[in-house]
Image 1 (cartoon, rainbow, N blue to C red):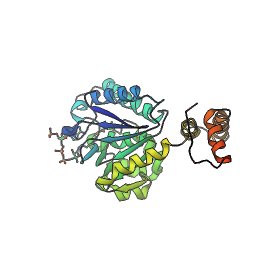
Image 2: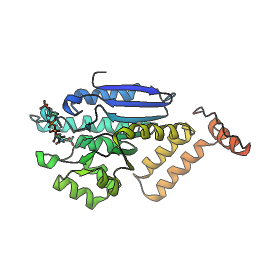
Image 3: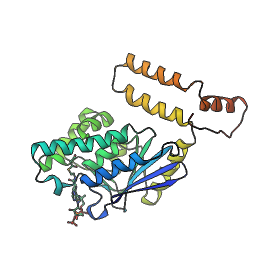
Image 4: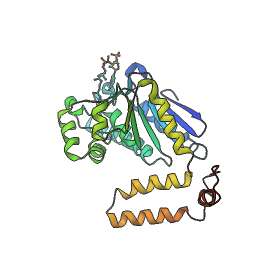
Amino acid sequence: MGFVRFDAEGAVGIVTIDRPKALNALNSEVLSDLEACFDGIDTNVIRAVVLTGSGDKSFVAGADIGEMSNLSVAEGEAFGKKGNDVFRKIETFPVPVIAAVNGFALGGGCELAMSCDIRICSENAVFGQPEVGLGITPGFGGTQRLARIIGIGMAKQLIFTARNIKAQEALRLGLVNAVYTSEELMVQAKKMADAIAVNAPIAVRAAKKAVNDGLQVDIDKAVAIEEKLFGSCFETHDQKEGMGAFMEKRKEKNFTNS
Ligand code: CAA
């Protein structure tokens, strides 16, 4: 795949957007490559994914402005749908996805990070939704996910003013969970992915689905979703293995996602 690399390190998959000349900006080809990359990940083997950008300057500097500059209304809508479809695929990907934001995460880059389950970033990271300054709205989920993650008032302020924020402010707002030096970022992202990968995959997947699906409905329906997913873990190999290990005071666990 031209613009997206995939590497497996044990049970951790590393997806790297690789278009450094354009600061990893998302044109249609990059979006298609990203989608194909996630479609190709073997989730029988991979238990957590880290998503990052190539180089040390940019995670993703947004959707490709050159490509968007002459779109018609219908083409603009279709481009938004393409991005949204790929990002929903990431958001609902069976195993957790950690965004390791290594620099600019602007527009579609911020939106891509927000479609991941967890965000951590480097000290030089810059987040923002600069779209209104370009005469458009955020179009790959930014108007929806930013408000859900940092709250409506602050999301509207950032979107309407098109102000970029640095890593420490992103941390304070809860947009990222932690800030590391550039050297440490991938080390810590992989460490977190490893910590996820050692747990029962069946339970991690069900927990991701419970959080995601429950947030879309009222609390009565949400706890019912949790009950179903909680129940679905029982009678599985992984549940018997996890509880068996506890009862036997055994540290080693052999989870098989079954
Ligand atoms: N689209 C296309 N090309 C981009 C790009 C983008 N979003 N961001 C950067 N590039 C390209 C530049 O055009 C430049 O290419 P050339 O060398 O061929 O001229 C190259 O990447 C390097 O960029 P700069 O020279 O501008 O680097 P810089 O360090 O001076 O500035 C920057 C970095 C502040 C990120 C600046 O590039 C910038 O402002 N980029 C645009 C950011 C932006 O507005 N993103 C939102 C896009 S709209 C969107 O994403 C819509 C949506 O919601 C779906």
